[in-house]
Image (cartoon, rainbow, N blue to C red; front, side):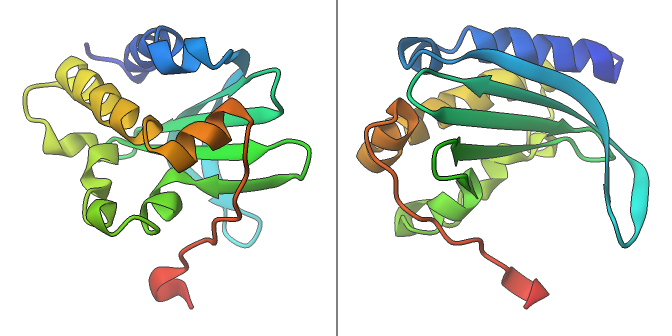
Length: 154
């Protein structure tokens, strides 16, 4: 798989086939190629492919596949009623056993290739989706405020 568009199409196909998301009623709401940037610095050369999935329980799951150098995935969950959202890596900080497992979102850890990385990513993502607190939030049955980890940006 050579081009970013082919990789994005492959990732999208696997995302839409994810059993946990299908069971929770998620369908594709929007998709787009974007450039990462800020108002302060303007767009840079970091193209990413973003897919938003939503369900009937007022939840929106956003997955962004970033292709600048090392491929990584950013995943967030939004409560569309309360207009609150959090990144999955921030949620992981509330679970001590997951704090050092953020590497699952970085595909350079898989020298076997992109397809293998995607398969392993979704296996790991499904394990996260099975955590009771995240599962309830995905299904729209509960919501907890998850604080953004500013890390070194404070």
